[in-house]
Image (cartoon, rainbow, N blue to C red):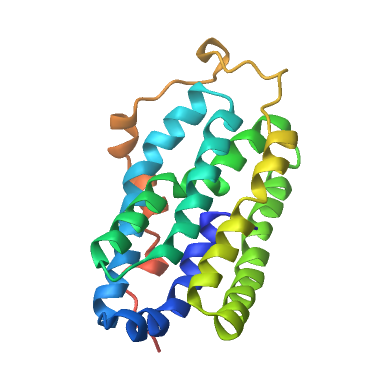
Length: 212
C-alpha cells in the first residue's frame, strides 16, 4: 500500500500545478521526471529480480524502502533546480520496484502453491488500495499545508513499510532455492527468443488498438 507502485504513478500529477507555480517550470518539463523514473524502473527490474533470487527479500527491500522514503521526502527541499528534481526521480526509479510487488511476490511464491493465485491477488490489492488512499492524502495535504509538506508526509508514509517488512517478510525456509531441485533451467537469451515471452510483455489488446 505504501510502495512506489501505489505512490509515484498516482500522486505525481498532483504536483504539476504547485511546482509550476513555485518555480515557473513548464508542465512538459516537469512531466519528463515521470518518464525518467518509469524508464529507470524498467531498466533496473531485471537486476532486482536477479538479486531477489540470490538474497533474502528483506536484504533488498529494507534498504530500498529507506532510500525511497528519504528520496520522496527530499523533494520538499527543491530550490528551483530542475536537475535536482530529475535526479531524485532517477533515484526513485532505481529502487522503485524493490519496494513494490516484484519483491514481495518473490517471498509470497515460496509460501503458497495451491492458492498462489489468491496470495498474489492480495498483494496486488494492497497496491490498488494504497493508490486510492495516497492520492486523497496527498491532495488533502497540498490543499491544507502546501506541496512541500505533502512530499514529507508521503515520505513518512512510505517508511511505514519498513517495520512490517522487517517483521513479516521472509522466504519459506523449507523451500530450497538450489537449481538442482528446479524442474528446468532456462537461460534469459532463450526466453527472449520465444513468442510466448513477447506475447506476455506486449499483449495484443494493449498494442495497436484504437479507442472507440
